[in-house]
Length: 286
Image 1: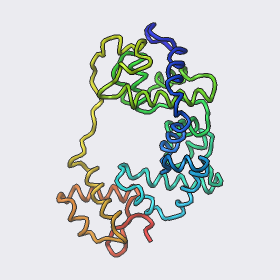
Image 2: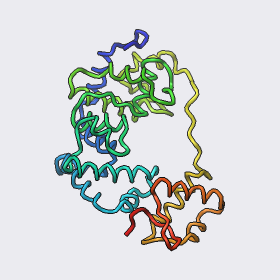
Image 3: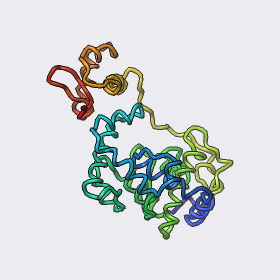
Image 4: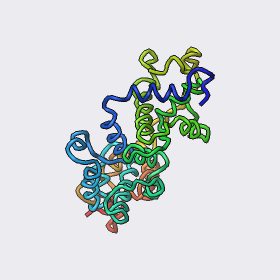
């Protein structure tokens, strides 16, 4: 790795692995399951082996997709609930209820992309893979290039840099990936970076350059958007015991054209069904 001569790859790895010694095993398990979308809390992980915890959640995926959407609640991006439901079915049907440990098999699951596959393979199974989430990308951009923000999308250069930093030992590679995530989430944050607490600040290109300001990637607005409208409509379906009439959806959003557009997108995404009687319901509702 080149960081303008400020810090070597070996020093960076050693500093982060050392800083992550305490509580690392528990964090690896939680990160892996969180990345996969499994609703398993810390007390569950402490009470049973990791695979058993995952399997006991997958058993609930025999229920209709509507139940997955209801359990997802207001977490946002509800299509992920359907993908989780679909992934669980594939895991049960093709992998005997065990989350596969191969990146290729993970990528074949519905809704699993490069980040999730690498995170599960690394954190749950101790393999050596570059895990690039938002926090990791921000840390590497600041440390190596002196830029405050990474590119809008993952680049080949980012992947190559992350892979070059991985320790050769698989167990250390997984720990290091957790450490970089935690560094970005708790210290090298987006709005208030705590450089005084950073174990690699002395070699960080961005810190040594005086924290140059750059244009931060903009966040999409939410108020008044189709996304907010979709959420309102889906909340009606989620809270109902069965199909609801169109009038119930009309009541939660005043703009008829936007409401129709949002409802059409829910139907297209498989998050809602149009019933023969004209009502609407979650998919596969009993």
